[in-house]
Length: 78
Image (cartoon, rainbow, N blue to C red; front, side, top):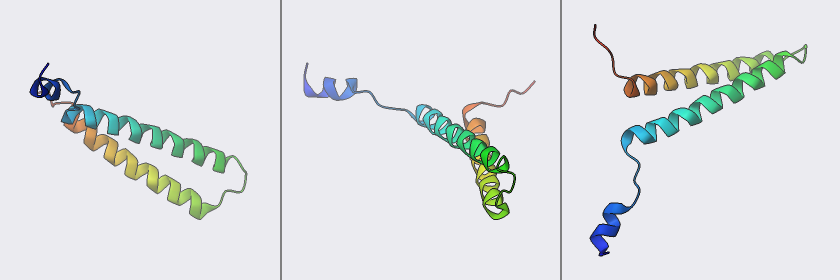
């Protein structure tokens, strides 16, 4: 096998694959924040500032998730 064949055979991630990986990471982070807010609320006396910051982070992640999903899932025109 020559060098050019080896280069062409190397695994590369295309744009959609990279977006799917990023999407999974963001979903995991969102889940982690969800668990953190639930745990904080479960203490009985949650720090409201911390709780607000966590919820704001969750919303920002959700916005990013939606944007990536929109790029990956084409609109179907009926």
